[in-house]
Every structure is written in structure tokens, then in C-alpha cells.
Length: 320
Ligand code: XIL
Image (cartoon, protein in one colour):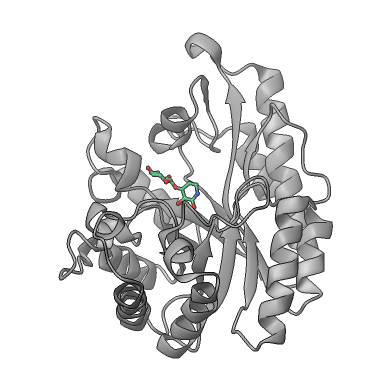
């Protein structure tokens, strides 16, 4: 079986938008969240900057609420994320911590967060986006790798395994849908880590696609080569944005192309054994990160703002 997921909106770019918090205050949103999906991801609510307002405090209210909602609705949860270069709190990035202190901070964080939800998380994105688009390790941008070296990534997986032996532990990134230098970098690194006995269980591609670019036709082949290493795979953040200059409405052609991309991703995921999770990065345009992040682009999800279904919605449903 494949779990079909969505990100649960909240935190991040939502904080600067002038609508009430969707998860608690939009009844239609909540109903669809419970009805249409079998897996949930925290869009921001399990990230460092959200969980850790200061060094002493863990703020679990919203992450807990997602876990409770999932349990009530028989859904699994993907944890996102433990080691990343983005959305780290200021106190951490600017704290002037020594290498030993940083190591202890990450260990404590993983033990506390992963431990809290032990047995209840399907997959954890342990390490997120550690390579850049030139397939180079983010040695400057990623505080953990910069201060502690690549070995910290292996440690993060080991600490996560110890804190929750049941969760599948993943590397997650974008622009690794197809076979390219960046996914090659993961392929090489993961082989090394596995040879060293590091508990890596999975490799996932986020799947932030754009109709501006061609479809990554070798998506299934790419996932398959990781499956052949004995790993699980997943698509974790699927959306398909399009160019909408000056607030233009999507054309029927754009919507058809978008539907085709959604369908092809679904088919690829279904075709790869051990690819058991396909998550959309939100399901309604209202709360999508895309127009906020990519100027002049949007309409990236499967539902219009009034929750009517786009061709892409039907494309996913029909492919399943
Ligand atoms: C995005 C969220 O959707 C936004 O709300 C937030 O402001 C920024 O982060 N890759 C990831 C996700 O791994 O965590 C990012 O989510 C999108 C890109």
C-alpha cells in the first residue's frame, strides 16, 4: 500500500498571511485533511525554529496537535526535519557555540523530539537538503556540517535510531527527482554510510516541480536505484507550480500539463517497490508556499481556493 499524504499548513510563510490558522480555524480544510489523506507531514511545526523558541524551551503544542489529529483519523505521520540549514533559530545560528556544545544540542534535540513521538512516526526526514544544486555538500550554509563535519550526519541517524527504532530514517532533498549530479551525490554518500553501518532507511525526493521545466522522466529509475540499495523511497513534498505573470489565471493547457505531472509522479511512485509514501505539499492553493516563495508562479496544488478539484486532483485519484 502507498500512504497518500499532505503537509499540514501552519508556521513558516503562513505566519505572514492574513488568514486565520488553517489547521484550527478552517473547518473545510480540517475535514478534507482527515478524509482525503492517510499520511500527514508538519509543514513547519516540527522544524527547529518552531520547536525551539529558545535554548531551554521545547514548544510541542502544534506538533502534538498534528500527532493527535493523525491518531484520531488513523493516519501515519512523516517527521520533518532534524538537521537542516534553513529555519534554524537565531539563538542557534548566532549563538557562538563550540563544536562540543553544538553536538550536544543536536543530540539533545533528536533524543527529545524523536523520543517524544517514538513508535508514532512512519518516516523521519533526519537530514534535509544537505547538498546544493551543484551537488556540493552545504559546508558553509549548514551549521552542523560547517562546525562538525559530515560525520554529524551519521550521528544524527544513529541518535534518531536509538530514540525511535521503529521510524524509517530518511535523507530528503529537492531537485533529486531524476538521475542527476545531485541525486548521484546522495547515491554515493548513502552507499558509504550503509557500508559503515549507519542506520539510513530511506531516500526521498521532495518533488517541487514546475511546468516551466520538463518532467523528470527518469523519476522511477532514480527511486529504483535507491530501492536496489535496500532503501525505502518516498515523494515528500509534491507540488507543480506554473507561471502566472501579473496574476494571470491558469490556462486549460497549463492545468492539463499540471495534471499530467501529478499523474506521472503518482505512477512512478506506485511502480517502485518500497516507495510507500507520496505526500503533497499542501492540497489547496490558498495556503500554498509557492506564490509566496516563487514570484509570478502559483496554482501549484490540486484544489482551487474554494476547494473545488482541479484536473490534477482527478489525475492523482485515477492513477491510484
Ligand atoms: C517551506 C514551507 O512550506 C513554508 O511555509 C516555509 O515558510 C518555508 O519552508 N523544502 C522543505 C520544506 O523541506 O520544509 C519547505 O517548506 C519547502 C522546501
